[in-house]
Image (cartoon, rainbow, N blue to C red; front, side, top):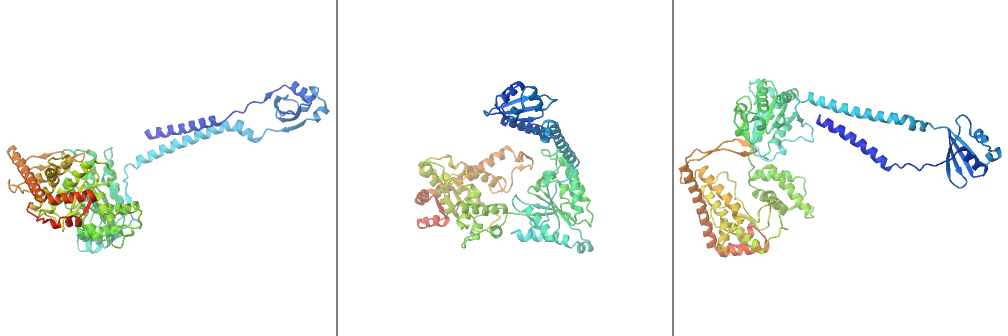
Length: 610
């Protein structure tokens, strides 16, 4: 009703505006001089009338002096008879051009019909518009329980496993689903039951939706896509109705795939306190459970669902017979990242010397979506530089843009701040190079990006899923490198190390409470409840005493102090190298890994234990 009233108001305002505009531009012509018949007869006798146009009873008189007059004749008699009655002779009339015109049909429409017809037409149009809006509202009310399913079946949208780089084991697992959709009879003949629901688990950007579409493309079956949040409405029962409609639509099109994205929007564990107790969401979840139980053995519909929070899903959703097949998608390794970058670079003009392997080495922890964005940013950078092909450096620069944000070269900083930043970043790089278990330095820069005044990029030489205690200690010492360099060089510290200290403190606490690498022994402390409110973890259960809390704080402080002393030792031992790297940064602003190690090559830098 609110939109209905709004449409009426808009219509009235448009009509009012048109009328107002017409009134502003329309100018009423100045009326002609009115004269009597006796004055007209006198002017004719004096030879002052050139012509007379008779239009009904109206007389439009043109004088010999160029002036125009208006007069009225008698309704019952003609113009000649009227003028004779006023004493005008035939000879005097013969000198005047007299023309008679009847009222035109257009005048009839303009003067009589149009004033009645136009308002009637306008009212009919307004009434029709109002009725159409009301009819649409009624249709929406009847379609309220319909699911907003999107069908991807055209060749334009069709993708296959060839369009999904990496995920080799995951695709092998999904071939079973494809084979069932293509050849269900051989499975049914042997008495096998294909999984009704497949849950794709992975971090954002890992390719869950793309993989689901690739399954449909390989099997060449309809692919229905809907987000779980589209089931839930403000009215209780609508979500359940839409769920029934979605499953019914998929069954009618079988063999088919029904893909529910972000299923945790409705599949969150029931009765979990915060986030639970939502009648509409729980009814929608119950309906999903019932619908999946309703699949018989011959139903050729596979339900795929995606989530990055499997820990908060309701157990009933994960039991056998529902989403009992769970496939995990992880971040790609170096070989998979190389393949993904090549896939997204296909069709783009590239320099002949592009080495995708080097780009893959610099992007650990990047998801498939991040790598796609990286290639796109490289193309944008190339255009901004006036190039027609994408160069290797464009790809390198796009990595830093994705990680830290665009370069802020126009940011005005004082010479003193620039010097402090140079020594700070040199301290990070030098400590990384001076410790045995630290990752090698790939780049050092004092160019401001995002919120960072400068940055040091360290990357591992090989992919590793596990980290040792010595690697964590080296990482802590590298984080303290900038802090120690400021102390050693300027005998003072600045706020530039605040983010380093924050990250170091978080890592040290994880070493103690989660990884069991402290003197407190192989035990974890604290249990984080997976209750979400506005996207934040709001509760952590303390399963230890206050005395243990003090020991945890002491252990965390011990790791941080040890890392600080290690960083101070490296910086103090190789002060010459620190000065050399900082001065070079002040000159060049950026040092690649090869340039950095060439600077310190002759300074007898022997890595030590953290």
